[in-house]
Length: 131
Image 1 (spheres, helix red, strand yellow):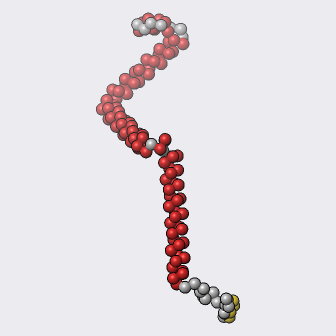
Image 2 (cartoon, rainbow, N blue to C red):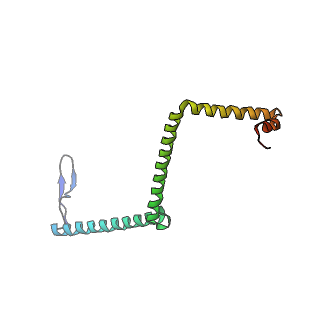
Image 3 (cartoon, helix red, strand yellow):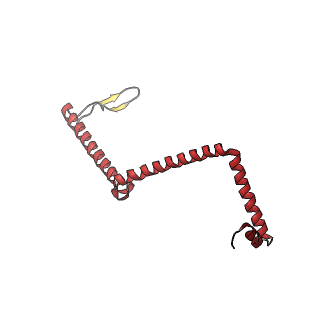
């Protein structure tokens, strides 16, 4: 095929605007390229879905996977409710609860010190605790 040579201020070379295909042939080529692209995309998506089902879900069990996460959500909600209740109870009993904890800690510290000094059995007998 003979190509016309174009000479301008910025370009010297063959005329690339000369087409060798008809419009109908180009449409057929474009349709085929789109079909090939869709087939490749469909194969890729199906492979991705297959990999997800086998690798992301234990034994491919979608229902079990969903139930597992729902149980985790329920556990988190129960834990949040527990801490909310614990904080509100601590606020209600505030200072008196703090004194109970301090009293218990002091008692344990005194018992530990008595045990180290050799008065452990006597303290245990005094408190009515068997050793």
